[in-house]
Image (cartoon, rainbow, N blue to C red; front, top):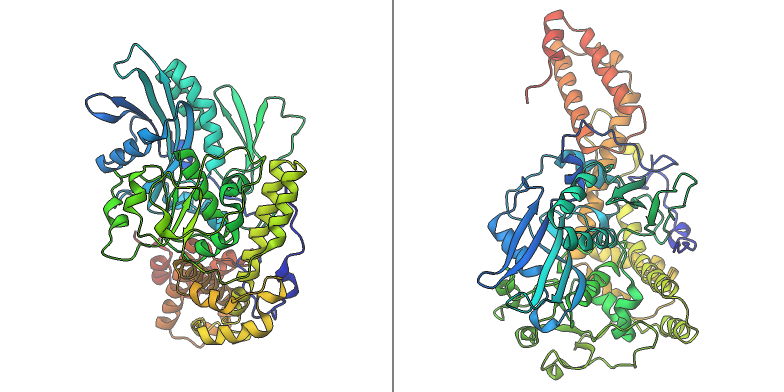
Length: 595
């Protein structure tokens, strides 16, 4: 379902043109700039979507074990294999009979590099922050089957098919597993080989393009969002006359059903938004990995379009390599969101400040009973009643309107997709109201365009001054776009100390520095360099050529947001300057730089 964006609140807040910073300024009308695909080798296309596919089985003597890795040349360290083994099976207390789908996230072994790194960076550039590849982590998407089988010693068949990827496309990969896993359990390895070969013929995951992906005799059609899309809107993938073979059209590749996930703790959604925004230590205790992973992913996505910058584990077990690090009582709990199902955690994580207890997620047909925030000391076991256990006092007053609107939807049997869209819109507007004042202030740190001289280094950004920012909130704070009252100032002060602010500001600072570099390059291109070098000595001219070449190389590497034609013009300037030099120097300067 496409939820149309209402008037963007920031449209009322114009910045002077020469102070505006927008890396997307040169964005073509029809989407992100085209990326030329390099000559791709066998398995390169597969690797742009997945690292590998694993089959994890249960051995009576060894316990969980990786039985198969596809493609066979895929590399996993022993530590990574151990993580995958333990995270691919539900805890024994979960009692997951039949088929279960969930996801997990684990640390990548240090020192691993992808040969496709530079190529894949092109796609990351155009992806929204929440869909960029996860540096240092892998996602595992699991399809677990447990059925009674009297022919086996344990009396049960237990096996998981797991997709390992850097991409956070949870909805897409779960849909893919629904096609591959049942076939695999019936036909075994030849089916996996066929699936991998199909995936290696797919186009690469380019944001903004409509992708048609054939798999196991079925065709999926989808679109990966771009950072240029207006937040809160989804561009529906339409059926075309040529789509006679398309069986599945995915409206989203990554969004979980927020309303279903938050239904058990429905009256506390605004407080949960604050806790996630501030990077507080949160643990979700759920009856199964499916509910634990969905809830953690819903929490992480509720502050979109802000990226959640701390660690999060949709499903976490006592065997995890970070178990000791995250459960120690010798220091404060880290900024992390954990999803757990083992009752042991009720005791181990009792000292954590915020605990969400989720019961069985029924269809959201009946509204959860209103629950008060519970005291942590009341959480004795995982059998405790569902609710939020915390001593946290929210900064903002409770928004009763969203509660009433969704309650009314339940009474009127409003479709789940509509309830989800209302809640997603609510979180988006709340986050935008919070972030717009920060965006305005950070844009004011940008030097005026007239201060950029082609013959001086690009000017520096002014530093972020917390008190100066706080003063701007009196006239241009969230009250311009949000009706919510409360201690917004206190919320900002706490946010400025959080990992989410640090990650957001680093990203904005990098974008603004690149914009300054781009404006500096454009200023250089407007200069008459031929006239300039007439006053230069030969040595100074050679030095200028070397500096311009270095700037050009760096601009291409960083994909600076320059106006179309800027880089070719700069290259032409360099060529013309080189032609004014003696032939021996021309020969040296025309040589490509040594790697």
